Image 1: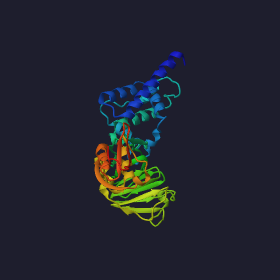
Image 2 (image 1 turned 90 degrees about the horizontal axis):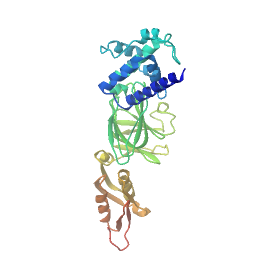
Image 3 (image 1 turned 120 degrees about the vertical axis):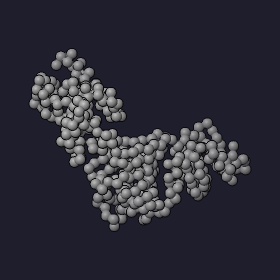
Image 4 (image 1 turned 135 degrees about the vertical axis):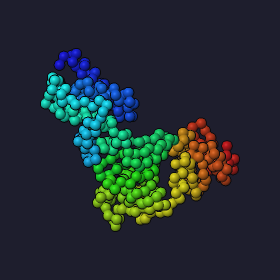
Length: 363
């Protein structure tokens, strides 16, 4: 291969990478999609390079794992296309000389199948392309102070609280969502063929048709059922499939109940909980009823740049109650300053809360 050929090949590879990134980032507009199809059809080399880029992140053979979307089904869909966007490369391959890594004269049939698979994948509705039938993992995340809602490909709804990340992966037998950090609420769509499982550290929660909240702390995971029922498994179960309903490593949790799994160990039984407090974050509220001051301050710190600082251990245990906007640090600081024996000092980057010693209770 001459230096000119190498430069041409490098340019094609770069263009293939650009198209792959564009397709993964968001659905292409009609004009862009037409341009992409035209570029694919221009030469088998374009197909080869596009697949070479795609192979770095995914295995296209996984696309045939879903019996509802087999290769033959994709081929049939492509054959029904009347727009001219799909081309049969068999004839073109016969006239094409051998290039680089693949002999298209011998492999023309596979090239045609592959390009049909690519076009078919891009032609499918967004929910079919979003990792559901390819089995690709996708991470949804929020920044500090931000919240977001996503409608997942299976019809479930994912609510993410501040500074949260959830990685979703679909297979033919289950929908696995790994809570990497933070807090999420799941509205689970019914699917009798595939379980809905949330993994948070060593804690597994399998939904039995439900809505539930999972909050991953540094030393524990807090799971609350808002509607329906879930089965929670601790670190003693090798997998949810190995545990039984009578096993000490599984706990059934119903509406209005909560469990805290510490170091992978389940409690003896779930406890009742005030659902208004648990779900207040969905309205960007913080609701607390006789909760320790330190815990409430930590909740405010999850959402805001200005942080509350409380060094006094005894003060952090003081029980307080109230309802506040999550971003309204001024109102919360004023409330703390009104409490007997509490002093609030506002600085440029933080709000110090301490015991007052005969001085003013607020500043």
